[in-house]
Image (cartoon, rainbow, N blue to C red; front, side, top):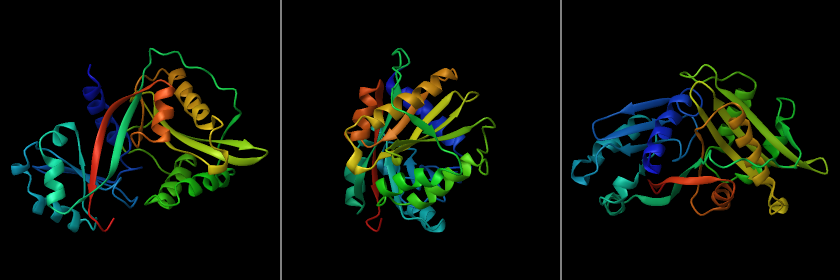
Length: 264
C-alpha cells in the first residue's frame, strides 16, 4: 500500500474515532467536506475539497457553510489539490497560506527502543503539571485552552468517542528535579487499530535533552504492546517534532497545505 493510500485510510479513521472529542460535526457537501470542532482555529475547523478541478469548486458556497456555522474559512489541500492548481486559486481568492500539516506513521518493521527516561502517567490530580508545560509551549496556538480542557475530560472519563467504545486517553509528563518540563498525549483503540500521538512539547530551557524522543518511544511502545499497527501523529513538516518522529521510526505519509482567512 502506498504512503498516500495509508494516509487516506488513517485520515478516515482519525475523524471517526475523534467524533465527540476533537470534532463535533462532519458536513459533506458536493464540492467539499467540512470538519468542525469546539476547539477554535483553522486546524480544527476546515474543509477539504471533494473535487480536483478548481472550476468545480464553488468557493462562495463553501464560504457560506463556514459563515452559517460561525467559523472563519480554512481549507486543507491534499496532494491531488496541490498538483491541480488549488494553491494558486486560493491565493487569488484572498486566502493566506498558514502552514503545513504533515501526517507521519510508524514503521512497525522497526523494533522500538525503550527509553531510560522516567516518564510519569498523568492523573486528574497531577494534570496541573501537564498543563503547566503544554500551556507554555503552545501559548500562541489557537484553541489551546479548549484543547487542554478536552485532554483533562478524557483522562477523567468525562468525554468519549461517539464511534469507538474502547478509546483510551493517556497523558504523560517528564520531571527534572521535581519540575514538570515535558509532556505528551496518546489516544488509542484496539478495536479501531489506531494510536494517535498528540500534544507534545518541552519547556524551552529543557530542550535538547532527548525528552521528546523518550516520549515518542514510550507512547509508540504502548501502542505496539496493545497490538496496534496504525500509529501516527500530525506535525508541522520540517519542524523539531517532525524531525524527532522521523528519527524514531516514523515515515512522512502525506503533507497537507492549509489556507485560511486572513482574520485567523
